[in-house]
Image 1 (cartoon, rainbow, N blue to C red):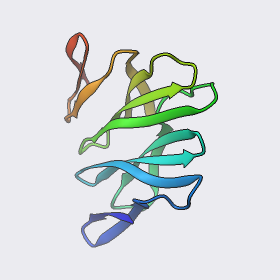
Image 2 (cartoon, one colour; image 1 turned 120 degrees about the horizontal axis):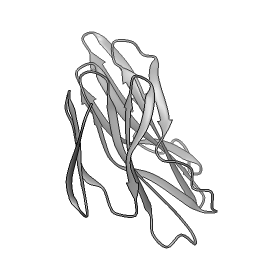
Image 3 (tube, rainbow, N blue to C red; image 1 turned 90 degrees about the horizontal axis):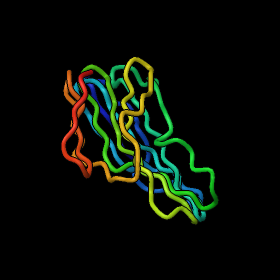
Image 4 (cartoon, one colour; image 1 turned 180 degrees about the vertical axis):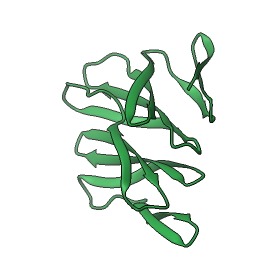
Length: 152
């Protein structure tokens, strides 16, 4: 089990191992900053893999917001994963999602930024996205063309 702590409060974030053989649910990635925890929850099925990203305020055990890791892949045997996850002290959450499926020649990468309850896609395409960083003022990442940044 994974917990996040803020002062005397301990918040349960989820299981680190699959909850049952199939479909199973587990925490795949997490990030902490100040009182916030960003969590990637993976749902593993038979010939499928799906991820949901969520933000929790560790001072309050309730979920702040959640979103699918990528836009849906509308094909059989789809696989949606998160390769990077960042949260900042202000509660902004960023992640790189990857989706693929049988019959799709190349995966699609999506960079999401979730601030103020609004989920925006900052970058998308077949080029791999990596080196994600998130500060109080800037979101940065790399792709095949180099380093990119967006002011929050």
